[in-house]
Image 1 (cartoon, rainbow, N blue to C red):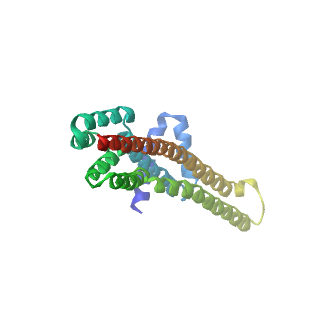
Image 2 (image 1 turned 90 degrees about the horizontal axis):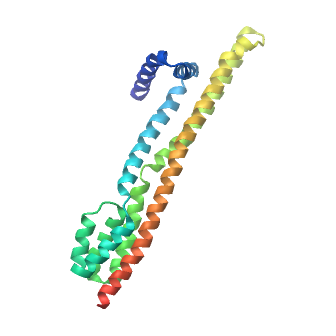
Image 3 (image 1 turned 60 degrees about the vertical axis):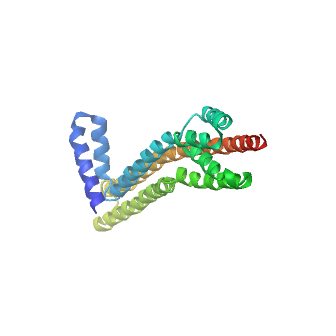
Length: 229
């Protein structure tokens, strides 16, 4: 209930600002005409966008220049050994550096142990990258479902109005049909907005995972070379 109360206050603020803009005024008017199901639909949008902003910030911080980082790690391995490479990883943010550091920690136990550590920690980092996406996906599903539920409610209102008036007239059913169409429209729009963010994050994560896999292979090759020396 607190969420809906906060959303209601947000809508009121928007309504006050809407006096200065015709399009915004129309949007608020249609929102209010959509009935009670418009609030959970708006809640789905607000919460979904909150998770999207968090994922965007996290994935932006996770992005590094992988090629430059691998060059630095290889140079550190050649000049200072594993300990120097660890320091490079410690001073670099992102999942690739974390995976490298996990592998270097296990280097003393053998290359097989280092390789297993890289694979295991790569899976952990992938879980961190995908954290929150399930909620965005949930709201993508819930928003149109709420819209369709509002559609059913609107049609029920329309038929109840016909029953009370004992006649069929466009004016009688207009309110119920308006609720039905508006909730469907807003639910679908919310789902489409969040779907764009979701697909963007999935593509970013795929690129990061690809970088981790490719760079991990190069690190293992570099460790083999170091061992042979």
